Length: 327
Ligand code: RIB
Image (cartoon, rainbow, N blue to C red; front, top):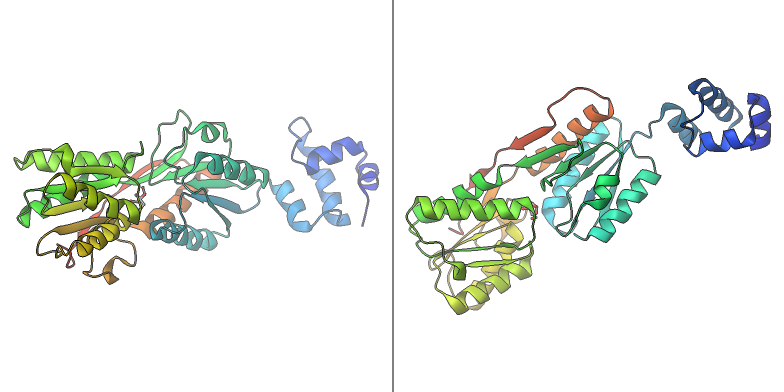
């Protein structure tokens, strides 16, 4: 195994030059010198061949994905779509969970850049001010939660407002007149767009928008449970549009505790169509997001950006209403 000094001697450069190249801090070193040193490094087996190859190719064939909550099946199904598509393209995946917190999101953005991933796919944390994202120089695709950025990134989302409109309209067509909305209070686009779709559908059908029927907290089961308890304190409801399926699960749990029959007394519709939605009691009527496809398309877009191919960097996928037995 050659030493750094012997590598430097063989290449006719200083040891400082060799270490700059091995640490990726070689922006002021000629490409010819880089390649010469890395050839010797690989031949002499100074560092594991995989790392030598990555440095030479300036590619690690690895992508990172950062999601807010791996326990929410929406994100684990999204990660599954990413991993399958990445594997087909010869990429490995590093999965990071930000706990929906900007501090962890920033940590993982740094870790992934230190590991020299070729690209990053990310659903931003809801409290993120996006400072670390704006500093990131690695190719990036934002999935699901689009955020205002003045840098060129890929974006793959769904038409949240149209999906929410469909959900609320469906409740109205099922005879609901006192429709509640429970979702995330955070400033993320999906929740804001779902609220606007709910409001637009009420107005288009001559129903009042009543703040007492709106409960905004988190995209969690607890929020669905708390939301029903809070709404029932203030007002009467005969239908609830839930900002995601976890909220719908919590809402149904609370209604059952209150001995309120679903859908006979209160109809419930969710958003996402995570894999367990069909197995809860009653099976959940919901707005299906093409979750797996969101992951696949994110990889296709990211690899095109890595390979500097000119592609459409803003894709909006459609949702569909899946009718089951909760309304
Ligand atoms: O369930 C998690 C929610 O957060 C999903 O609806 C998804 O759109 C994400 O924004």
